[in-house]
Length: 309
Image (cartoon, rainbow, N blue to C red; front, side, top):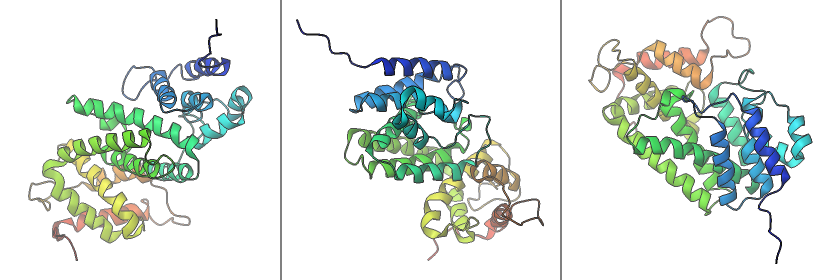
Protein backbone atom coordinates (compact mmCIF):
# COMPACT_ATOMS: atom_id res chain seq x y z
CA UNK A 1 0.00 0.00 0.00
CA UNK A 2 1.58 3.28 -1.13
CA UNK A 3 1.98 6.17 1.26
CA UNK A 4 -0.42 9.10 0.93
CA UNK A 5 1.30 12.02 -0.77
CA UNK A 6 0.72 15.18 1.24
CA UNK A 7 -0.72 18.05 -0.80
CA UNK A 8 1.04 20.71 1.27
CA UNK A 9 3.44 20.99 4.16
CA UNK A 10 3.56 22.48 7.64
CA UNK A 11 4.69 25.84 6.28
CA UNK A 12 1.42 26.30 4.41
CA UNK A 13 -0.58 25.35 7.52
CA UNK A 14 1.40 27.90 9.53
CA UNK A 15 0.75 30.55 6.85
CA UNK A 16 -2.99 29.89 7.10
CA UNK A 17 -2.84 30.50 10.84
CA UNK A 18 -0.70 33.63 10.49
CA UNK A 19 -2.96 35.11 7.80
CA UNK A 20 -6.02 34.52 9.99
CA UNK A 21 -4.31 36.01 13.05
CA UNK A 22 -2.60 39.00 11.39
CA UNK A 23 -5.79 40.00 9.52
CA UNK A 24 -8.15 39.24 12.42
CA UNK A 25 -9.68 42.74 12.46
CA UNK A 26 -9.77 43.24 8.68
CA UNK A 27 -12.86 43.07 6.46
CA UNK A 28 -13.57 43.33 2.73
CA UNK A 29 -14.15 46.94 1.63
CA UNK A 30 -17.63 48.11 2.53
CA UNK A 31 -18.74 44.84 4.14
CA UNK A 32 -18.54 42.65 7.23
CA UNK A 33 -16.96 39.78 5.28
CA UNK A 34 -13.62 38.79 6.87
CA UNK A 35 -10.69 39.82 4.68
CA UNK A 36 -9.35 36.30 5.09
CA UNK A 37 -11.89 35.23 2.43
CA UNK A 38 -9.94 37.19 -0.19
CA UNK A 39 -6.61 35.74 0.90
CA UNK A 40 -7.97 32.20 0.72
CA UNK A 41 -9.32 32.87 -2.77
CA UNK A 42 -5.99 34.26 -3.98
CA UNK A 43 -4.05 31.32 -2.57
CA UNK A 44 -6.54 28.86 -4.10
CA UNK A 45 -6.16 30.51 -7.51
CA UNK A 46 -2.37 30.26 -7.24
CA UNK A 47 -2.71 26.50 -6.70
CA UNK A 48 -5.17 26.21 -9.61
CA UNK A 49 -2.83 28.12 -11.92
CA UNK A 50 -0.01 25.66 -11.22
CA UNK A 51 1.86 27.63 -8.58
CA UNK A 52 3.95 25.91 -5.93
CA UNK A 53 3.62 25.98 -2.16
CA UNK A 54 5.85 29.04 -1.77
CA UNK A 55 3.65 31.03 -4.16
CA UNK A 56 0.51 29.77 -2.39
CA UNK A 57 1.96 30.96 0.93
CA UNK A 58 2.62 34.37 -0.64
CA UNK A 59 -1.01 34.41 -1.81
CA UNK A 60 -2.09 34.12 1.83
CA UNK A 61 0.37 36.77 3.03
CA UNK A 62 0.50 39.21 0.11
CA UNK A 63 -1.29 42.03 1.99
CA UNK A 64 0.34 41.61 5.38
CA UNK A 65 2.85 44.44 4.94
CA UNK A 66 0.23 46.79 3.46
CA UNK A 67 -2.57 46.20 5.95
CA UNK A 68 -0.95 45.16 9.24
CA UNK A 69 1.98 46.21 11.41
CA UNK A 70 3.69 42.83 11.02
CA UNK A 71 7.38 43.37 10.25
CA UNK A 72 9.04 42.02 7.13
CA UNK A 73 11.64 40.41 9.38
CA UNK A 74 8.98 38.28 11.07
CA UNK A 75 7.73 37.00 7.70
CA UNK A 76 11.31 36.20 6.72
CA UNK A 77 11.99 34.38 10.00
CA UNK A 78 8.86 32.25 9.65
CA UNK A 79 8.69 31.63 5.91
CA UNK A 80 12.04 32.49 4.37
CA UNK A 81 13.65 35.19 2.27
CA UNK A 82 11.90 34.34 -1.01
CA UNK A 83 8.45 34.70 0.57
CA UNK A 84 9.16 38.09 2.11
CA UNK A 85 10.78 39.37 -1.09
CA UNK A 86 7.68 38.39 -3.07
CA UNK A 87 5.36 39.98 -0.49
CA UNK A 88 7.38 43.22 -0.71
CA UNK A 89 7.12 43.11 -4.51
CA UNK A 90 3.33 42.77 -4.23
CA UNK A 91 2.90 45.64 -1.75
CA UNK A 92 2.23 49.21 -2.86
CA UNK A 93 3.25 50.50 0.56
CA UNK A 94 4.57 49.05 3.81
CA UNK A 95 3.60 49.76 7.40
CA UNK A 96 -0.12 49.07 7.70
CA UNK A 97 -3.25 51.08 6.93
CA UNK A 98 -2.46 53.74 9.51
CA UNK A 99 0.99 54.47 8.08
CA UNK A 100 1.62 57.53 5.95
CA UNK A 101 1.65 56.69 2.27
CA UNK A 102 1.83 58.32 -1.11
CA UNK A 103 -1.24 59.54 -2.95
CA UNK A 104 -3.16 56.82 -4.79
CA UNK A 105 -1.98 57.45 -8.38
CA UNK A 106 1.82 57.64 -7.80
CA UNK A 107 1.53 54.69 -5.39
CA UNK A 108 -0.15 52.53 -8.02
CA UNK A 109 2.30 53.67 -10.72
CA UNK A 110 5.22 52.65 -8.51
CA UNK A 111 3.57 49.27 -7.88
CA UNK A 112 3.20 48.75 -11.64
CA UNK A 113 6.86 49.69 -12.26
CA UNK A 114 7.96 47.31 -9.53
CA UNK A 115 5.77 44.50 -10.86
CA UNK A 116 7.18 44.95 -14.37
CA UNK A 117 10.67 44.19 -13.01
CA UNK A 118 9.73 40.82 -11.52
CA UNK A 119 9.48 37.34 -13.01
CA UNK A 120 6.64 34.93 -13.65
CA UNK A 121 6.53 33.70 -10.05
CA UNK A 122 5.55 37.11 -8.71
CA UNK A 123 3.35 37.84 -11.73
CA UNK A 124 1.30 34.68 -11.11
CA UNK A 125 0.42 35.71 -7.54
CA UNK A 126 -0.31 39.27 -8.69
CA UNK A 127 -2.66 37.92 -11.37
CA UNK A 128 -4.47 35.73 -8.82
CA UNK A 129 -4.95 38.77 -6.57
CA UNK A 130 -6.31 40.98 -9.36
CA UNK A 131 -8.51 38.20 -10.77
CA UNK A 132 -10.09 37.72 -7.33
CA UNK A 133 -10.76 41.46 -7.04
CA UNK A 134 -12.11 41.82 -10.58
CA UNK A 135 -14.28 38.74 -10.21
CA UNK A 136 -15.92 40.29 -7.15
CA UNK A 137 -16.59 43.59 -8.97
CA UNK A 138 -17.86 41.94 -12.16
CA UNK A 139 -20.13 39.55 -10.23
CA UNK A 140 -21.83 42.52 -8.58
CA UNK A 141 -22.23 44.27 -11.92
CA UNK A 142 -23.50 41.13 -13.69
CA UNK A 143 -26.18 40.72 -11.00
CA UNK A 144 -27.32 44.30 -11.49
CA UNK A 145 -25.97 45.41 -8.13
CA UNK A 146 -24.17 48.69 -7.56
CA UNK A 147 -20.44 48.04 -7.59
CA UNK A 148 -19.93 50.45 -4.69
CA UNK A 149 -17.31 52.52 -6.50
CA UNK A 150 -17.19 54.90 -3.53
CA UNK A 151 -15.37 52.27 -1.48
CA UNK A 152 -12.42 52.57 -3.87
CA UNK A 153 -10.12 55.54 -3.27
CA UNK A 154 -10.10 56.61 -6.93
CA UNK A 155 -13.67 55.57 -7.71
CA UNK A 156 -14.87 54.04 -10.97
CA UNK A 157 -12.51 55.95 -13.24
CA UNK A 158 -9.41 55.20 -11.19
CA UNK A 159 -10.32 51.57 -10.67
CA UNK A 160 -10.88 51.15 -14.42
CA UNK A 161 -7.56 52.82 -15.26
CA UNK A 162 -5.65 50.70 -12.75
CA UNK A 163 -7.02 47.35 -13.86
CA UNK A 164 -6.50 48.29 -17.49
CA UNK A 165 -2.81 48.85 -16.72
CA UNK A 166 -2.54 45.63 -14.69
CA UNK A 167 -4.21 43.55 -17.40
CA UNK A 168 -1.95 44.97 -20.11
CA UNK A 169 1.18 44.47 -18.01
CA UNK A 170 0.55 40.93 -16.84
CA UNK A 171 -1.12 39.58 -19.97
CA UNK A 172 1.61 41.00 -22.18
CA UNK A 173 4.51 39.95 -19.96
CA UNK A 174 5.66 36.64 -18.52
CA UNK A 175 2.08 35.34 -18.28
CA UNK A 176 1.30 35.94 -21.98
CA UNK A 177 -0.99 33.23 -23.37
CA UNK A 178 -1.56 31.59 -19.99
CA UNK A 179 -4.90 30.83 -18.35
CA UNK A 180 -4.56 33.59 -15.71
CA UNK A 181 -3.71 36.10 -18.44
CA UNK A 182 -6.83 35.13 -20.40
CA UNK A 183 -9.00 35.32 -17.29
CA UNK A 184 -7.60 38.73 -16.36
CA UNK A 185 -8.23 40.18 -19.82
CA UNK A 186 -11.73 38.67 -19.95
CA UNK A 187 -12.69 40.11 -16.55
CA UNK A 188 -11.26 43.49 -17.47
CA UNK A 189 -13.26 43.49 -20.71
CA UNK A 190 -16.47 42.61 -18.86
CA UNK A 191 -15.94 45.35 -16.28
CA UNK A 192 -15.09 47.81 -19.05
CA UNK A 193 -18.32 46.93 -20.88
CA UNK A 194 -20.36 47.64 -17.76
CA UNK A 195 -18.58 50.96 -17.27
CA UNK A 196 -19.20 51.84 -20.91
CA UNK A 197 -22.93 51.36 -20.37
CA UNK A 198 -22.82 53.46 -17.20
CA UNK A 199 -21.24 56.40 -19.02
CA UNK A 200 -24.38 56.91 -21.10
CA UNK A 201 -25.46 60.54 -21.31
CA UNK A 202 -22.27 61.85 -19.72
CA UNK A 203 -20.05 60.53 -22.51
CA UNK A 204 -19.83 63.84 -24.40
CA UNK A 205 -18.92 65.89 -21.32
CA UNK A 206 -16.51 63.16 -20.27
CA UNK A 207 -14.78 63.25 -23.68
CA UNK A 208 -14.72 67.06 -23.79
CA UNK A 209 -13.16 67.30 -20.35
CA UNK A 210 -10.60 64.65 -21.25
CA UNK A 211 -9.51 66.67 -24.31
CA UNK A 212 -9.34 69.81 -22.18
CA UNK A 213 -7.08 68.06 -19.68
CA UNK A 214 -4.89 66.64 -22.41
CA UNK A 215 -4.42 70.10 -23.88
CA UNK A 216 -3.58 71.79 -20.57
CA UNK A 217 -1.63 68.76 -19.32
CA UNK A 218 -1.45 69.87 -15.66
CA UNK A 219 0.58 66.79 -14.70
CA UNK A 220 3.04 67.24 -17.55
CA UNK A 221 2.40 63.71 -18.78
CA UNK A 222 2.50 64.38 -22.49
CA UNK A 223 0.07 62.99 -25.04
CA UNK A 224 1.17 59.35 -24.84
CA UNK A 225 0.80 58.85 -21.09
CA UNK A 226 -2.02 61.34 -20.84
CA UNK A 227 -4.05 59.32 -23.31
CA UNK A 228 -4.47 56.62 -20.68
CA UNK A 229 -4.56 58.77 -17.54
CA UNK A 230 -6.68 61.84 -18.22
CA UNK A 231 -9.74 60.20 -19.84
CA UNK A 232 -10.26 57.92 -16.84
CA UNK A 233 -9.78 60.88 -14.50
CA UNK A 234 -12.29 62.91 -16.51
CA UNK A 235 -14.77 60.04 -16.24
CA UNK A 236 -14.42 60.00 -12.46
CA UNK A 237 -14.91 63.78 -12.26
CA UNK A 238 -18.16 63.58 -14.22
CA UNK A 239 -19.38 60.56 -12.27
CA UNK A 240 -18.73 62.26 -8.93
CA UNK A 241 -20.42 65.48 -10.05
CA UNK A 242 -23.54 63.64 -11.19
CA UNK A 243 -23.50 61.71 -7.93
CA UNK A 244 -23.76 64.98 -6.00
CA UNK A 245 -26.93 65.86 -7.97
CA UNK A 246 -25.59 69.39 -8.26
CA UNK A 247 -25.66 71.72 -11.25
CA UNK A 248 -23.25 74.64 -11.03
CA UNK A 249 -23.25 77.38 -13.62
CA UNK A 250 -24.55 77.22 -17.18
CA UNK A 251 -24.88 74.13 -19.30
CA UNK A 252 -21.67 72.37 -20.17
CA UNK A 253 -20.68 71.00 -23.58
CA UNK A 254 -23.47 68.40 -23.43
CA UNK A 255 -26.13 71.09 -23.11
CA UNK A 256 -27.52 69.00 -20.26
CA UNK A 257 -26.84 71.55 -17.54
CA UNK A 258 -23.92 69.60 -16.07
CA UNK A 259 -20.91 71.57 -14.89
CA UNK A 260 -17.93 70.25 -12.99
CA UNK A 261 -17.57 72.04 -9.67
CA UNK A 262 -13.98 73.14 -8.93
CA UNK A 263 -14.54 71.91 -5.37
CA UNK A 264 -15.48 68.42 -6.59
CA UNK A 265 -12.57 68.49 -9.03
CA UNK A 266 -10.10 69.39 -6.28
CA UNK A 267 -11.45 66.61 -4.06
CA UNK A 268 -11.15 63.96 -6.77
CA UNK A 269 -7.71 65.27 -7.71
CA UNK A 270 -6.56 64.90 -4.12
CA UNK A 271 -7.85 61.32 -3.97
CA UNK A 272 -5.94 60.42 -7.12
CA UNK A 273 -2.80 62.51 -7.15
CA UNK A 274 -2.53 64.12 -3.72
CA UNK A 275 -2.18 67.86 -3.22
CA UNK A 276 1.49 68.06 -2.37
CA UNK A 277 3.16 71.27 -3.47
CA UNK A 278 6.19 71.19 -5.65
CA UNK A 279 9.44 71.84 -3.80
CA UNK A 280 9.83 75.53 -3.02
CA UNK A 281 6.19 76.42 -3.77
CA UNK A 282 4.92 78.67 -0.97
CA UNK A 283 2.93 81.34 -2.79
CA UNK A 284 -0.34 79.42 -3.25
CA UNK A 285 -2.51 77.39 -0.87
CA UNK A 286 -3.31 75.03 -3.77
CA UNK A 287 -0.77 72.98 -5.69
CA UNK A 288 -0.03 74.34 -9.18
CA UNK A 289 -1.57 71.23 -10.75
CA UNK A 290 -4.92 71.94 -9.08
CA UNK A 291 -4.75 75.58 -10.18
CA UNK A 292 -4.22 74.34 -13.74
CA UNK A 293 -7.14 71.93 -13.39
CA UNK A 294 -9.50 74.69 -12.27
CA UNK A 295 -8.32 76.77 -15.23
CA UNK A 296 -9.33 73.85 -17.47
CA UNK A 297 -12.81 73.86 -15.99
CA UNK A 298 -13.19 77.60 -16.53
CA UNK A 299 -12.60 77.15 -20.26
CA UNK A 300 -14.89 74.17 -20.65
CA UNK A 301 -17.90 76.20 -21.87
CA UNK A 302 -15.98 77.38 -24.92
CA UNK A 303 -14.27 74.07 -25.53
CA UNK A 304 -14.65 72.74 -29.05
CA UNK A 305 -16.15 69.32 -28.37
CA UNK A 306 -15.19 68.03 -31.78
CA UNK A 307 -11.96 66.06 -31.98
CA UNK A 308 -9.07 68.43 -32.48
CA UNK A 309 -6.79 67.92 -35.45
